[in-house]
Length: 263
Image (tube, rainbow, N blue to C red):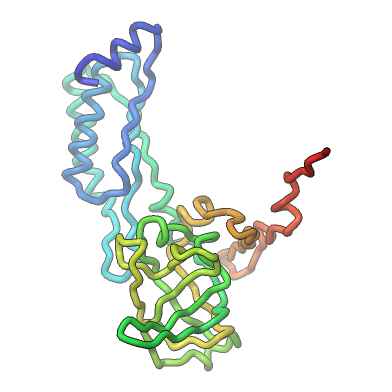
């Protein structure tokens, strides 16, 4: 932008620039947000036709205990100051601020509920207890893709609160795909490295609830990998009522677009 390449393209093709959009990933550092806002506004200054500045990237959500979430008041103040300074220095020109708070709003509003299909013990120095689920990267890809850590809870398959045990064990949780990368408990930031998680002791048939699955999970899943169908989705209303909002995908829908070859 600063070297004149973009303004040159705009002039060459007679374009009207209406919005400047930047993306820094989900962050929580107020200084970074101030730097991004200041830099983005410097781009807006180049084009008098710009009416909106989109500071994309979202806000960090602390999915796990002790993991901080973005303080919107803290990051908002320096951004507000930057926009006010821009207006003061540009004859009162005010821009519309656009943000992308999707993850911040819904990350903790969804959970993946799975059944423990199998429990495997390996021996030796590198042995582990493995819990295999009836879900996996076909539903939540974040752990396999970039080593994301999600909170997990084991609940009894009976559904009875009196059956909730207190004994814990360290386990590695894996998905149902025929894929070494279908790992639900990687080391943080290391998707190919196994990590154990201390959970309530589980038996086959128990439930594992993976929280923090409301964003970048269903929409980013490896849909139909290994011919697994999309899982159903259920909405729990404020009054506790339950509503099916996406039915389980029928097998026929997975291969309905496949065609026979004639001849």
